[in-house]
Image (cartoon, rainbow, N blue to C red; front, side, top):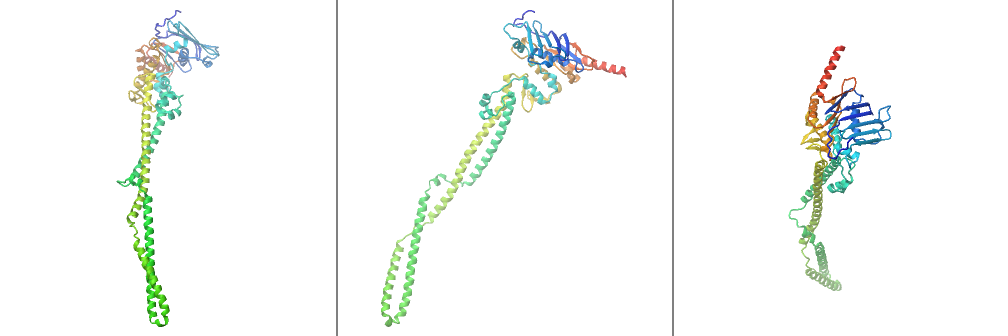
Length: 475
């Protein structure tokens, strides 16, 4: 077979040869634009699609692919100027390409001309949203590193991420974690905001914190203490003077009584006179001492002390308020930071999909839904969903550096899952593009039937009519 130069364009699979592969014993056919395999289960329909996938993207030990009773399985695809042959034995899988362009390895060449062959537009159409999301993630390669996450969201978030998962799944988990952190931060901020408001309400309007921080309570206390001591001394002197006067008065009374007995008590009278004079002198001395003492008026000092005591309590509230305001500021900053990170986590999937190459323009994948140009996949009509699956399959089949010269091949398994309207729509779409299709459908045929470029909807309608006619004959 002639060698193909690098600029040669490969357009389609010309011929398919399968031997001993799963349920297919021996198959050698030419493929058309749309080649269909019909028949009941276990007749090799799915085995044909699997064989094509294995020929183009297989490898490793897979002895279960060898048909029972055979020692090896073989699959050959004739691409015109290039043929791809895959042999599978108990020991492994062996690839041989004839007509390989110069300077390319066999597996690298296959990777450059084929996209993912396991994406089935019908299976995507039938799948539940969660499975559709998984199928799309497999088609869009995106791996993140801890370094990337740390650069976007910080070391703490990056350290808890499972970077072995798909990048979009990692971002979904990051967003969920950030939303939780933001919720907690908002709770802290709200609690601190309430505390600031409560403390602010306890501080009197116009309170001068600096004045009361600088106040000298020691001087006020000393002044009050000295005034108290002076007052106590004055009271003691006055009490003593009063006692002395009282005693002198009693002695006068006694003296007047003794005057009547002066003759008999003359000597005692002299003693008493001296004693009276002495007591009066002491009283005068106490009066002079008391008159010399002038205790300060402590009314103002006592008021200042009371005001100081109250101010000290208020200062504690002021300090608590300042701490609470600083704590609130930190909480608000953390909440704003987490809001930014959540927004970043929600924006990154679109960036990553743009970098990885979305298979469909306007496709967005989130943990909650799949949307196309802002419309949820679940809200699309069934025909629109089917066309989306086909558009994705076309896009993925056209991947790679040699996409324009590559093998535009799409495999469709399970056409029986489509209703007649969607089957006709798929048939129309397949006939109107430049792709090669290999499809299968479970039917009531007794054995495997292969058609090439026969309208799928018309073939199904004919099969149903034949089945009804046969039933009528039996009845």
